[in-house]
Length: 323
Image (cartoon, rainbow, N blue to C red; front, side):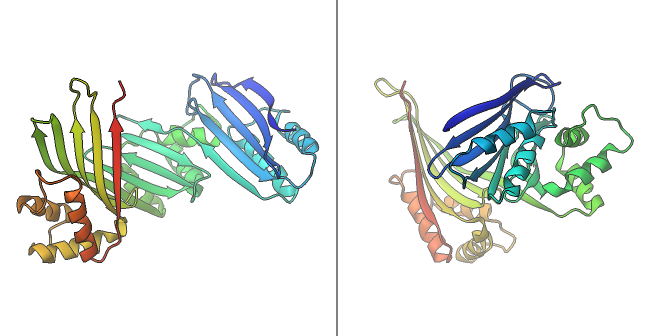
């Protein structure tokens, strides 16, 4: 039996459609169980929340196992994620190796912050993100979820009883990095703070070609990279709907200290100068700038990366308006 088999469909108390399905595919056969939620209900579930578990099958006939999965999940309503967990336990009990995955939409906390919950991440985590001129992530382990819920809830009564829903309801009043840090430190939780900032270095309007030319520096411990980019944005002209080109030199975030140290010494800057200040000085001295051949700025920065003893990769990006 190959293909998807829907085991059960129901409507939750929040108005979402809950679908339980099994897909058997491949050779050797792989079984994938999905618990998904769709529709415009209320609460945290969102339109695309889903919990999965999959395993390679030993038996030639998956029918009995699919029947067991149905019996284990459709008899009574279960909180979100629990049907998947029940199936994972059933599969593991038969000796199969399993892999869990899930997708839970971000929860918006005010206008500039989000909360991401990844129970099946590597590692499982709770991530608070604050957006603005600088993006900040504060990450703690998913196994802290119940402790945080208990602390934040206190004597308050919450409108939902499922585990993730209770945590989100308890956490929603928190909207700033400072609140999150104070909370985690008060509870003695281990956490990691990551950040990302994009520094504009140069902006030029090439009127003769209707091109906006920019140089930028991205420093991101969130994405584990430092990227210098020269970018060309050609506006629409008769017979040309517009084009964009980007050329980057990319190195891991771990290169930050050796690269900054090298550039400070190379440029004779104060030891307090950050990497952004070093790159601004390169522009100010005319080492980097407008009026050079395409990729020239990127290649020069690549040479500086190599001189600093850090590994880097050249990269490029192209977009052409097809309208």
